[in-house]
Length: 634
Image (cartoon, rainbow, N blue to C red; front, side):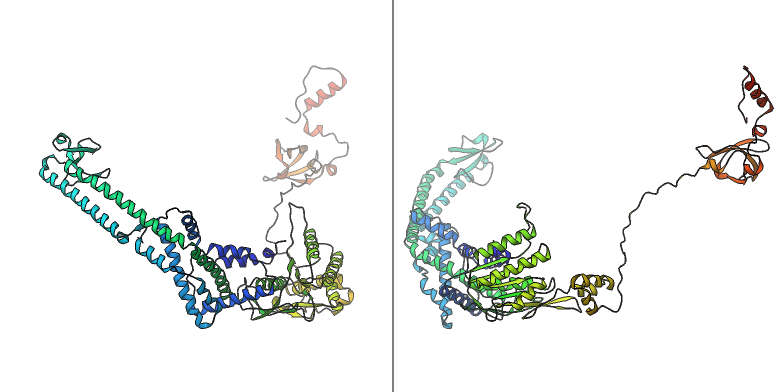
């Protein structure tokens, strides 16, 4: 159960760490936990208050990160020679110690106990001055010793003499030179000689150009100074190492006082970081008690914007040991219980709290169940996660615990959830711990009204603006305001009556005050489903136009007689006075049906077939014949 993450104390720690300078102080902040010894806690709170006072009066203390200096001291302790860079890091720490001593010394005028840490700091002025005098910009200064100054003066003289000899040679042999300036090759002063004159100039060939037309020759007159220069440089290196080893030995001798300086600086960095956090949060020192009472006046959640945060007034421990908070969703119940626990944990970690005034008891443990806790990997539902957390809380709870639970008994059947909520409350009451829970169950509110040491509290809600006011009223039970919200947002009265009746019965419907203007529910969906249009069912066109029907053919408006009914393509054949035509049924209009013109057994072949065909058919019906019957209606 990660309490710090659930109530966002981990976020407070991250902000706190940014105010620290040293790595050790940041690590101490990460590992800080609640103090269980009253004397230790009171000292921590005094330190926080004193650091805040010094910050307000003297500004930010001159602290710096000393992690690198710790490593340097280890190297010096082993007897290895420190580099000029490392010695400068030691000097910077000593300068910071000197400035911190001055800062704390000025704080003594305010009778501030933190100011007396100045007596534990030793600026090691001799060591600091020696390093400052002998090391500068990462190198050993010329004036570090008389010997080094003389050696470097001789080196400069020797290099000048070598340069002068080379220039004299070049002036005397201008025609042999490829350039008018001498140069340095491989640490030696050389003259640029043309290829064809390389044997005319006495000396050693040190290098040649890329084209091979120029040879860089160290003249004999210059070479005799080179050995002297090398000896001087060896002497310089030896003197530099002597100085560095001397300074390293001084650092090694000062290791105990340097470690004490670093320890004090890291401790003060941790203490001052608490004061900085208090100033950032505009917090105050809380009173501490062991009488199991918590009183917060104008408490704020430190992570919320002060411009919109509504101060919380809270008290527990004197009238009751348990508080059941009810009220509408988004009414601030969860923020309220988090604010209470976060304030208590911060106080017990030696921090100031974001309140106008606070009296906070020490707690042996902080236990909570907040959030739905769903976990797909562990196959936990919301209710299962709640129960798992609650059982863990009940196993660890004691008289000196502070417990908070959000939406207790939720995530399951309301009736069964209410029963479990009451059972949990009863178990918490028997443990004599301090506890705060939020719920919507009306039965739980009734339980609080009839049970000793438990009282109701509610988060207020403005029914006109439909906005929570984030104010807690202890001693009164709240309501969810669901019907009021639904009513104001436009739910029809008929639906509200159904909801009220289902929740509280017929009598509640008569007592409920509905809005005079009837709301209505309209479908305002702008999206529509586009369906594929289905083809109209086909009509039996064959039954519409039958053989012998008298029809009018458009657009000529000629009268004809149907001689072939409509086929599957919607085409029929019509006998006109002079010809037979195929025509779409849509261009034909029925005039007189065939049954009105002809008898039922009328032979239409008399009208539509030729005399030859009729005779041939008659012959074929009586006997065989080889004559061919022509197509009718041609």
